Image 1: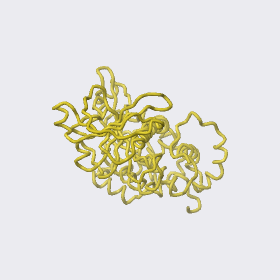
Image 2 (image 1 turned 45 degrees about the horizontal axis):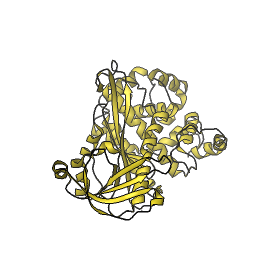
Image 3 (image 1 turned 90 degrees about the vertical axis):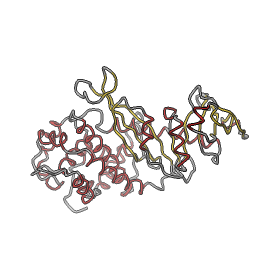
Image 4 (image 1 turned 120 degrees about the vertical axis):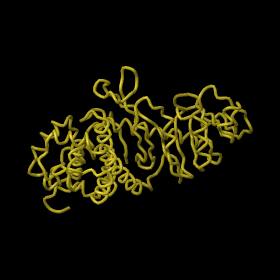
Length: 389
């Protein structure tokens, strides 16, 4: 890091300005932008995410307090609340979606050797959706219930590093299972889903495209058993059957055999029934894989706690999507920096340090050397931890 540069400037060195400008040019983002460019907008919104700003007025006040340092960060103009609001309302959110997806590809390459909780060489994804509730009178476009508004984040998470690989933002009333319609499947990969995604016509596409799924069975589904495999009851397994769907209609949607694994959780004593099209993995591994699906739930809880995606700086659909995609890009960017600098801390602690040292003139690694040991003494047992070592 060059002498006199801030932590914020060093953090943004890990962003490819060339790739960012390609995204801007793709959607003509800087059209008629004489002073406040898309890059300025991104820096301001990233600052808001990293320092937990509450509103545009809050962002404006804090940035003006450090005005002499903004030039070296890359912000060449005086930041105004109205200018930021106009940019969030009018500049295409797909600029930041494409940019975030580029960072995701970089992060996945860095975390490709991260171990899984299950000893597998395969790529394992977890698919789920979460609701972000909104006020109907302020966000009338976000249809959910008659008196409520909400948006839904459909997210596919790569369990190697908890990196979100696919994110779709829809109205709250959009069913979870519709995410399967646009999902590009990776041959040989394993997809973990809850029983809300049990739609045999959609699940059959996994078999057609040589991908695997593991999900929970719904009540009322009728099967015919074809064969049984021996199981070790001491592991919690109760049965391992090859089955076919029993009714003519359901068999028309999924004519191939399925594997049904019955399992009792040793901790909760809850009986669980799993369905999969993978016939080679041990039955206990199927149960362990489904347990690993909880990583996507932790991801949702983590970003809701530590990123600004529950309170929004604008009310239009474009402003909301812009803020969410920039928030996700910041999450992935910090994960990239953590890996490249080999920082031996959780992502939570890294964000905490960045929030108070953004404009300090010190390398990120040095900032952590100075304060990381003290952070370890803080009781954060009630905080959700991702990337723990």
